[in-house]
Image (cartoon, rainbow, N blue to C red; front, side, top):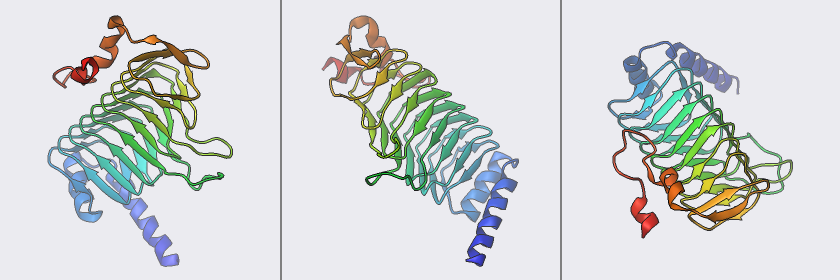
Length: 251
């Protein structure tokens, strides 16, 4: 036990030493000291990545002052972007899809050993081309799935998978636009191609696609009209060509 604790302290100290190193050296040392699988073209700023198993795809960029720790399996796809001052902490696995983006000042974590009446599946899955903008709180003590090309937009939305006694997953379909200040409770879901209005509180499962959802508690206001389609059809990043998922929406 003492040897294990000493080994962990040394490992943590090495991670701290790596923070100010240039990206090319950091990548080299991550590959050779910790056996992280990092593909060509990856750039890592002054951040800590302290996980058990790590894959980072080609061309991905991770900015400064991110703290990514205590995750058993981290998988980041190609050409993804993680901005600055984000926390990703805990859980079995975090999977961030190709070309996905996490902006800045997001707190994304899983409670370690939660007290609950049932089992949990502490995994976060962020789909291809999805975007989490800034200042959001995402609790993946149970499973959270954010679909391809979905945007968690604006500021200060919260996705909670636990309460005092229970944990339940959250799922958001593809090509959704979730406005600022949205709250999602454990067990809630959204279909695909949905727009969620500012400040909505999602307390149940919304399975219908192409809906405008708003209110406290939230309800389906109406089917998505042409004026709102741009919120779910346009690419989530300016460097992504084409209209994401539009052919699926129009059948």
